[in-house]
Amino acid sequence: MKRIELLSPAGNFESLKFAVQNGADAVYLGLNKFSARASSENFDIEKLKQAISYAHLRGVLVYVAINTLLDDKDLENAIELARMADKLHTDAFIVQDLGFARMLKDHVKAPLHASTQMTVYNEEGARLLKNLGFSRCILSRELSLDEIASICSKNIMEMEVFCHGAICIS
Image (cartoon, rainbow, N blue to C red):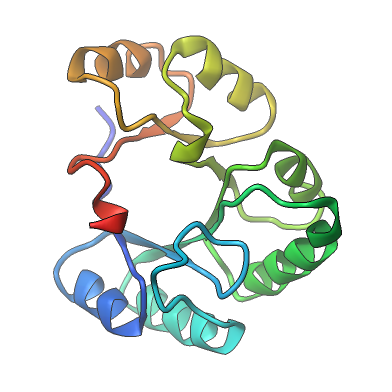
């Protein structure tokens, strides 16, 4: 059986420290652009550097959410932002936009996690994302425990679920 990862949102450096100090295995955070976490303070590149250093020193992974749908005019800026984050040793990118994900695979080393905003709610959706190069799927929040268990039993890829509803905005 695989180990469960406790993943916590980090809207600012203080909440990141709180998550790390209280046992999170990983944190996810947004940058100051292209993040669905707009109500959080979020991180610029310098703060991200500090956050990754702090977390990695304590054995905690950092996932960066670039999880909005992007206009064509935003793609190059989003790719550049992801490149900078990747150079800082971001552990994964959480993305929603499939076109951006396709481009991103050519520019970063970190794995891609499919955002819950993709609304994956069945085995077919998970298989599609696996074939597109995603290493983890964050399942739709509306799924029942039985539906989650059914999808996870197929061992398609790593699965992530929100254990407390829409906690990222609570």
